[in-house]
Image (cartoon, rainbow, N blue to C red):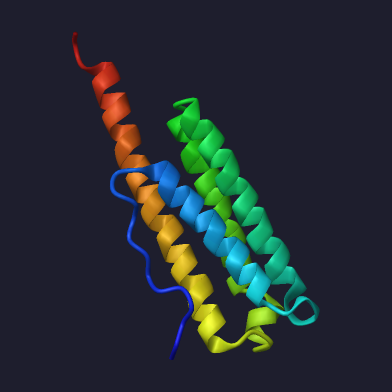
Length: 129
C-alpha cells in the first residue's frame, strides 16, 4: 500500500520542530480528504493541530507537563478520527487511514521525547546544587 506520509523520525532532539512537522502533516492530510466524505476527521485533525500549536506555546514557557497534556489531547483527537464512521465506513481510502495512523505514531514519539525531557527537568530541579 502506498502512503503519502511514511513513518517519520523525530527532529534531532528538537521537540518544537517535531511538533511543527506533526501540525503540517495533520493539515496536509486534512487537505487530501474529501470534505463531503470525511468532515468529522477533518475537524478532528484540525483540533489535533490546534492542540499541538498550544503544546509549542507551552514548550516555549518551559511548561513540560502542559506540553504533554496538549500532546495527549492531539493523540485523542487523531484517535477519534481513526475510530470515526468516516474510517469505519471506509469513506477514507486505506492509504490515507495509514497516513493518519502514522501521524498518531509520530505524535506518540513526540510525547515520549517530551516526557523524557520532563524527567530531566524534574530530575535536575531535585538534585542538590
